[in-house]
Image (cartoon, rainbow over all chains, first blue to last red; front, top):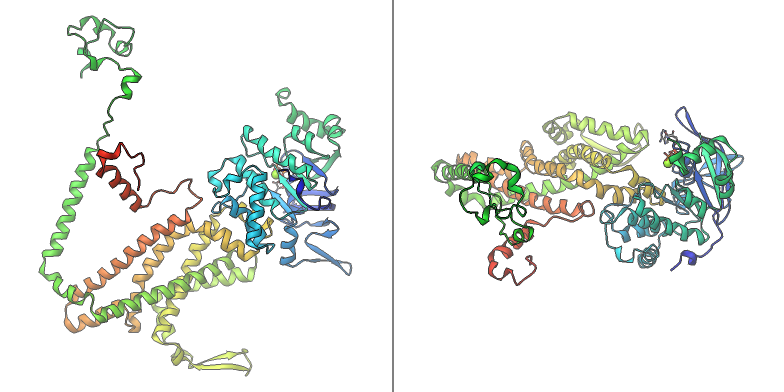
Length: 268
Length: 352
Ligand SMILES: Nc1ncnc2c1ncn2[C@@H]1O[C@H](COP(=O)(O)OP(=O)(O)OP(=O)(O)O)[C@@H](O)[C@H]1O
Ligand SMILES: [Mg+2]
């Protein structure tokens, strides 16, 4: 089965406007501006510490921004504009907004005491109030899509890393999110397990869900991305199509980063 | 066998290179004909060898010593007439004792359950980002851990002396919703439950907080990102995983509480220990009566220890790749493999 059966294929436009974010005195995001169109697959690359994870986390309101705004389909994340002021949303509203944004973590973060199926149905039932029978049916469908129909009752520790990440992807999809954020989904995996996870994401990319993917898999980025942005020091340094950014980078920092990532053998 | 005298066959030196390395100079000295058992066996031969389990001679010595000590203690317990086992047997299931036991269990159950529930709330308050909640929780634990339980119990019981009435209303105004006589409100039982519960809450809050802190932050983050509400996050995602760290200490606390309830004898509350005291003050049979109470405490603790084993096992689901067998399963497996050794070859699975 393909993931293309997800309904409402055009939704999930993300707009990031002049976002600043600091931890203490260290500014992690500088004036970040970014528009992700409905159904676009955006890949974020950049050296360690450049603020890629932080950017993703602000989109899910796991981190508050210091300045600037982030919106999803025109609705501000975490705030409401009223009388020229930004009012913080109530917890329930923030939770509802989060269900629109799926997130897949580097370390999977599956709930260790719950089976694969229980992991997937938890949020639909308790964050979306979907009836249990319906949530279970949907979860089984998703497990089949990621090729794990027979692992519904397995606990995360009984699964390989690649299988765990595929369950985590199914869990994120169970809420029918408008946008799915991937934070280095394959960096904790052994090389031979990377492919199976990338296949699932590739399939998802064809379905028309907006995806924002942080990855170091440059080959995969070239394949799957509609657009690539390169971040360094908390700024978006360069962006464009994969051919532009990977094939003909304009900035020195992009060039040096790519030379390290693509052909590490040449940089001893 | 000393290697010097090890005879090595000259006939097939190529097939048995192993002994050759150790004593090349003795090769020519071998007078005896070759023995099969000394030649290095091939892999195929080894496959047919019978396995002889490793022996643990010191384990047997230890077992004998421990058994001797245990037998000695048991013998002295059974034969020393001053233990007065007849009296123990007579009182063990006496109605007053059972009533006291019931009260002990009731106190343990109520103050244990309330104490841990309140402790859970206090732990969440302490960990919350609200400075108000966390300081209230901290202060609570500070006060109740700093005062002796005995003092707390006596204070609660004597609340009527300190405050004759308890008024529900708006402070510093005359608005009153309800008013109670303190002495009618705080019975011995209420004082006991109040004292034990609040004290237990202060301690269990720290135990639960420790358990919560041991859960990977990524779990909370994932639950948050999924939009799962805060309370559900705490009870469904964090607490069950914290349980593994909480349970061993929590059972320590509960077992402590079972015996700790005996402190409410200061309120003349007739739980097990107080009942026993009343009886031996009358009959002067101090030691056997203490033995009655002790045996009951041992029974309760044993039941709790068994419960602990299974509850811990329950919460280790998912944390271990495969759950270890329960003692019962182990016993069945042992019996199945040992009792039917003759037929074992025909039944592929040993467990029942
Ligand atoms: N909670 C935090 N408190 C303080 N500093 C933080 C925190 N989270 C991130 N940082 C800092 O912010 C910077 C950006 O971190 P971020 O995790 O976004 O980088 P990244 O681009 O995702 O790196 P990587 O590729 O290694 O994951 C880093 O310098 C990091 O040390
Ligand atoms: Mg990161």
